Length: 468
Image (cartoon, rainbow, N blue to C red; front, side, top):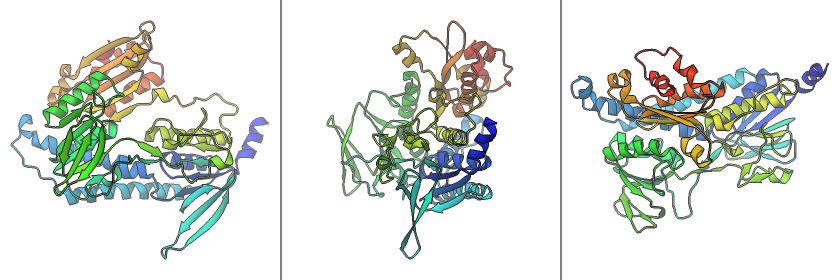
């Protein structure tokens, strides 16, 4: 009887979702499947600006750069030398085509499930009321008041621009101006050595641009395993990238010939363009959240393990929730929100999202991926761990691919053998890390990996070797 009452109380629920990124669209499709009425409000692009205008284009451009690198290395694979020339206009069309196809496919899916999509800007004007402002082609605006039983905020984030940087979209670029930029830089200065920054270094270096990377600390990827960072640093140096280690950018000046970036240690980087990759800030201003009692912290919505805010029927997903800024995390949050709000968690056991077990990847060359407990963090916390590491130089498939760079590292519990974490540097690391992610999620042991019959020859064999 309790289940029937819960079904009756949730079947007619109206979800109003502000923001159509991975979190919002996942919530919309899942809630619709569960029988809810869904209204999705998106001002830019269905699929999310950070996802379809940042993440996907960058990976498309990286794939083009990787193809160029492979062709340039053709002689090492027993092929004749091939001269490869980048068609920058064709690259732009390719990126735009991928964006359009993904948005069209997602929009068609949502509409087929009965989701109402409104192109406009939403803001809270009451605990259940969302005011939506839409703009007509003639510039006029109109508003509509929508009442929802469940409110989901998934408005994403935008690039952080410091006060000293005058971004013009021409010489001084944010990430949103670089997929692709107006023209291929002769010499690109990248400010920021996190995930986004190093991907840009790899991308434009592959295209033939000279690249300078300003690294504020003493290693690139400061939050990653030092051994992982060391492989990438050496790769950059081998490819002619100029690294300004331990330098923090303080100002940007445009000259007759390009740009100059001055650092706090007195060094000056000179190039044709500069690109800022120094983090992001949440899109939460003007949403009226604090006015209705939603607790915020530095612009992020504070959520519990069910992704609920301090207003119980208002949830947050994606970057604006302040959790890991990954599309996979946002998608999972969206699904969990739909399930929780529709009562699926009321009378049955379920898993909460364990953000510490989220796998992530960096699409440089070689690729970098990790999941779970990091070796350095475990030692810093005084945890007892077992660490095993095997280089790809032991892999027949790596030698066949003519790319034996990198390694697999597995962190496990020395008492039980349970897999706790891992790092992979090498070709297809983003795919291989899924094996370790599943092992961690399923509480598998290193013995389970050792006794798995992997394909031969395959890069995945190194996972078994590292587990042994």
